[in-house]
Image (tube, rainbow, N blue to C red; front, side):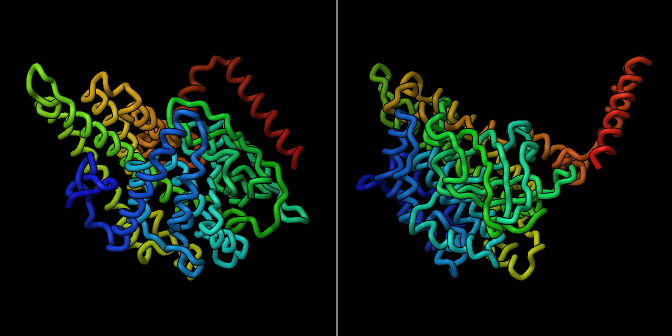
Length: 466
């Protein structure tokens, strides 16, 4: 069960700590191939990208050579048709043995691929892109965030789409988009054509690089230096076949495609970052000795306690992620995206939404906490770049604040648990009447009259607009 790193045994946790029973023989073979690509290509580029704040394009090309860019797409498009378990393994492997920034690039790419394959049936443009993706190493990304909604669950207030003779005129501003200015293609969500104020009425569109104003080279952050996230602006007229699905299909796409894949990829990626921290810290504490005591750092009970808690927490988060992935596979004919050809309204993945959000919360919290524990275990050496831990510590913090942030995610889960799914106001549509009446009760007569006049003015303006 010895895991190899080139010609030598791997310096981190051995294979006996990996839940290999979830993987098929083909997936185990792919995992070994991917670890070797991480050793030769992704890991060296991770160090280079971190030092120079550069986009790891060579890593993207290496993933394309393994056929991983369109990994979940059906075999009829020349793709792998990888299931959910496989995609968690791939994300974890990239982050753990290779490059956390590349794992996030791959995460947002695969989320966008999910949006495409969900509605690929009957759309020749989408099918053509899926067929080209690995052959031409076409990296994509999902641009969904909005400048006004921050780390909350996003909905596009600063966006819109209109029907025009050429197809669609789409306008969109996004606050954060991974691979901004570097992606070859983007999918983005806006309010639907003929929008009437209901933010559940959403549509998804496909754009190519020359139709998007990105912000290449402007990413300047604490960690994830290769991620190159940044604002995006779209003001483009695109052909009719570049709508992904149909007008108003965006909310279903969120629930059934975007969110399940995003949360699973969060889980795989940040579990991988936590494991990378454990691995490099193990290498240090098992090799570093204190001559005056004749003991290695690893021989101290306090260090063993730290590693015991870190490994146990990591395994709990990993088992949760792989268990959820297996449940999704069981519910979708082993991760098939062709099920929507028979029933476009099928929602088997959405049934696991609360579990998916829990996977995000567990994994991103794990990476943040474990990275600190391993830094403490390594002491002053942990601050040195050559150990690689300081880079991983910086990278580990990003998932906590990525939307929906952990605070918002925990609140969503808690509200769901207490009051049921109907209590989640995804699109900010429900009025909290008790709070409203409580606030109005604080106003004196003049204040109430000001509110009445303001509402009357809005109603008059609304009627005039009609």
